[in-house]
Length: 195
Image (cartoon, rainbow, N blue to C red; front, side, top):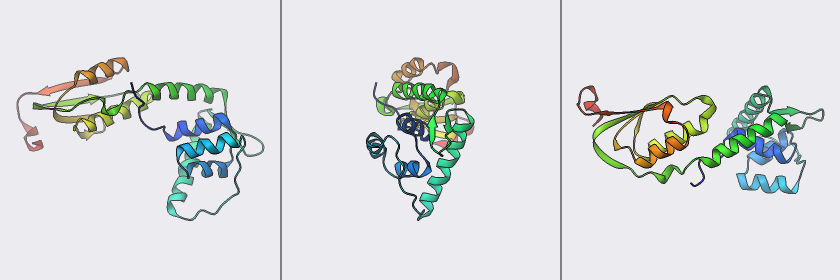
């Protein structure tokens, strides 16, 4: 299996704090660069603390707000803590969560591993995957989009597509079958307008 989706904002923060303690300026210095550059910086500087800089545009303001909101959620969940000198660091619980999230992320199959094949009948896929398995849920949405299904609601997708056997196998490997229902519509009715 190949790598799944790009790291989420939460796991990126936990990854950064796994190797260093950072203040807000340090986070912004990392987040306003690409993922690889962030790691290069942290590898060279165990306690990165760049100079404070003015926020120049709305994108940076939005990034700062998103970062602050995520830090507060991680702190509330006991995954990170703030030291006396205003540096953020990962907690023991955060290290365990990071390991769990990383292994789950690396286990996800490629979104493009499944081939779309047209069908004469409509298929509806309905799922209710728990929040704890959000990465898997997001992976499934990306797979369905790749297969040319259309979203009716976030967890209800429809398309004239045969469900690939490889997708069923991946759902089984990811322990998602109990959360997913696949229906086939053989008679047209109110779905006629979807043609």
